[in-house]
Image (cartoon, rainbow, N blue to C red; front, top):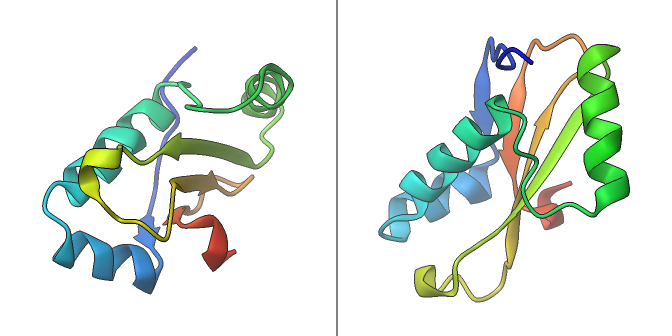
Length: 99
């Protein structure tokens, strides 16, 4: 499968703030975006992983989830989500609580 084309990458204000305040968090997020582009959906269950694989072929919305390493010490959040809209116009990095 080809990489997912990301036309526009955005992040919620909470993600942007964490990127400014927590050393290494920006790099973690960018690494996760690369994984998402390459069809590595992160810490999803098998059923959701298969749903994303299907969604790539049928141009549907994609959702990946990645557990935040404990070494980053964010505390109130344990994972990030990356969502690419069905039309591939935008990919958003967010905390589940931002949804």
